[in-house]
Structures are given as structure tokens and as C-alpha cells.
Length: 147
Image (cartoon, rainbow, N blue to C red; front, side, top):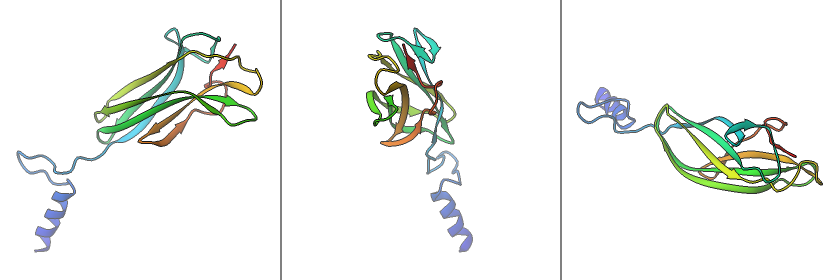
């Protein structure tokens, strides 16, 4: 009886595969931010000019299973002595298969030079299903300075 109960429990948890059926439980994947950067005219950049066409790019990898949910990429203005502010954000409904990766980009145009007032530059925050999962390192580079 104990053996049957253990097999049933393993079946419910997706540890046992029944021929022709597959697993009952599909393991949820782990989202990994593999990289984030800025590009100007398609080239990696840590410096841009006011009115340049810039993209904030985030590469996501799905580990141990499929990743399904809502991704938010927030481009934020970095201020030295006042609260940072969201400049632009974009949401993506994502479905990434196990061990696959995908790059998501948010285009924007800088409107202010670094050093004007408390403004230092731009950085990226990444959210998954409304929870912040990563903030770009607090240094220049990788954050974006504007001339």
C-alpha cells in the first residue's frame, strides 16, 4: 500500500511518466536576465546624445522549464539627489521555451544631458509578473550617459 501511495504521489508531482501520456505536472521555468544594455544605431553604447535613437535591451533566458508571464522593461532617469523617475516603460506578454532566450527592446529618445541639475543618465529596471527582478548596476558604464 505504501508503494502505491508513493507512486501516486510521484505521479502527481510529475516525477513519473506514463507511456503515451507524458508528465502530469509541467515544471515552471526560472527567468534569468542574461544581459541588459543600451544601443545607439544598433551598436552597444554607454554614451548617447540628446535626440539620438536609443534602445534599452534585455536578454531573457528560460531555465528548467518554460517561462510564461508579463515582462516589464522600465527605462529610468537616474538623479543624484532626488528620486529616480520612470522615463518610458514597455510591457511584453512572453512565452519562452526551456533553455531558449529572447531579446526585448524598448526604443526611446533622450531629452536631457547628463549633469543638467541632478540628472546623471539612464538605467534599466526589469519586472516579471509585477515584481522587480533586477536593476542595472549602479555605475557608469553600464548606465547610459547623455551629452
